[in-house]
Length: 224
Image (cartoon, rainbow, N blue to C red; front, side):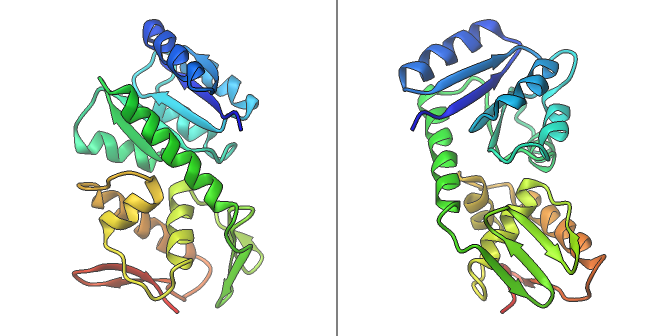
């Protein structure tokens, strides 16, 4: 299968290098040089998106916020910023992963492969899970309470999917991050804490049932 990658960066030389590398690897490559072009080219339905954070006209975080509810494909941020809060902001805006510039092409390829394989595995999962008024549709990637569909970011949904597929098992924050983002999550436990808080807030608007249980000193689990 030929996967389609949309690469967005205002560095033309970097885009040229990435295009040449991934076309040799058998990928179909689409490029954009700013945020406006990226939003327009989302209509081409890429399988994965590489998105630079710092761009003119519209930065990568704003692009991600605008398109996240239009596509379900993984989004990997390309960023020169190493501060933890910058990485947290990227993930909470709807991104799935990040890689710091300058980066190794082999590492970038490994991350892309991991995300694409995980997307394929999702297709083989059971169709739905129902518990105490909450319905998770794994095929449509939607969560419903009663007649209401929850407005979840991709990472929020991914956490609910992962935990609900493993009910009763306790996972620490780093393990949850690794499973939903597809790469080493060391140091990113703040992201998981914030995402779980948001999930609880959204479900709490429609039910008093708490689906994700905190196991103090250990992590989280989906209540059976």
